[in-house]
Length: 229
Image 1 (cartoon, rainbow, N blue to C red):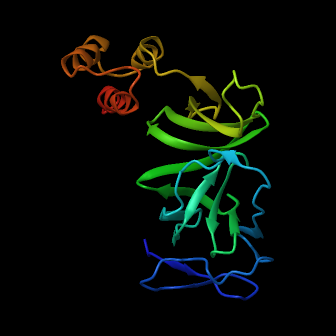
Image 2 (image 1 turned 180 degrees about the vertical axis):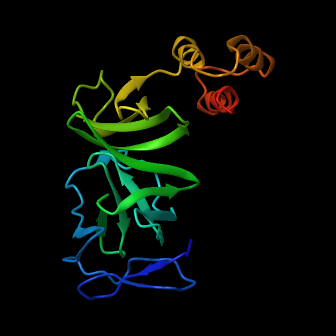
């Protein structure tokens, strides 16, 4: 697969060419619209709000966009806006933001982790791919809510604050359903019953390696072992 880098100028569309420099989005106009998304100016709130509606605390993230046609683009300063369920990239230092849609995008990889957009049951959401097997995929979804501050000194919350939450889901490869999933012994042992490997062997592997059912990385090890064949 050819590695193609995206260069953006003050023109009506993206210009794609081979280069050794990743996209920095510093030449994109505020009224720019493309097949990958659109740009806008971000207005800072008039009052102080603690926290952020973005997944990553910092913007210095390099992402790789993989399209449905097999192309790959490198993008700098990318982050996930949880409220909008959209990946956004800073264009310059003047609060210019480019918001990506998933119309032509298969997945986005940031810091070695893959993110995909799924639409199910009238809900459109970006998920992180935790584990992908033949019959199912374990996903991690993100949500954020704005908790209003209080003037009551007993509450100890004078400012509004963004509160982020992570939840796990399971997606069936057969019927494409997405359901809530807990990292628990009960939920995972139920999955292991569908493995071609004897469940007792899986449980012995978990015990011998002192793996926790609540630890994401440990769960990945369990699933990779249980469904390795």
